Length: 341
Image: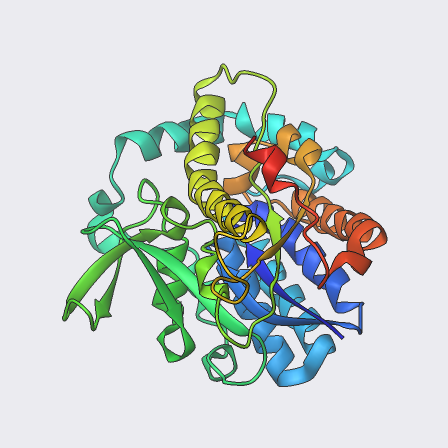
């Protein structure tokens, strides 16, 4: 049995790519997911995966992921007409991005605080996240689950696990401050209610919770925010999207750089084996697809794009398993030395 940890990035509706990745991994009976760290959409995927596994094993996990993304496809105020299903995701992304409703909503979100709605404010994700069975999400059985959010007051990351995971914790992990009001949760360390924003600002996702005794060395990162975009963004939406991608990837890159540094110390004998873990890093991604999409498809969960992302996630995992499955438990398949050289 090959035991792995999963690190699930956030990225709005693009998290449907991770849905496909998880589905495909569930087909491999000799792969066990021991730990999951997730942010935003990654936290939702992680909660659905764990709840389903605890309740009904692999079939239960598949069913719970299906339910999650069926509900996500019903969220949003700008659903496209059914004829859009015949278009490629890139065409749908462009159609949404340059549509009048999206332009109005995008400009409105930049000018109007979510606090301006007063008693009429409602987080549209709450109805989705409330449906999780938290007895199973927080259970001692199944993979260990970690959900990250950013404390507004201190700017520090907070990782929720076990009984700390709740509707509010997951909503906090997915709280983009220009769209949603901060989520307030009691913090026993500060003995006060703290306001939280999206975990992507400080960990997208946080890797350090996986460096625990009892969890395997292999960390498979499901990357849905492109590390590289060759074309310089020009429209205001494209510029803002790339700013968000860079800021949300920066925390992940910092942790990967630290892993690479520890690995160099181990290789040169400056650290003795056992003093620090030799983390084995892997990545499943489809940067070509993600580069063809945009902030519009992150914010507007249209069924056609969700379905294409799901299948792209399965295909990317097929490629990963075909090339690297035998490396799990043996060596990293991401060349960190080249990445940071």
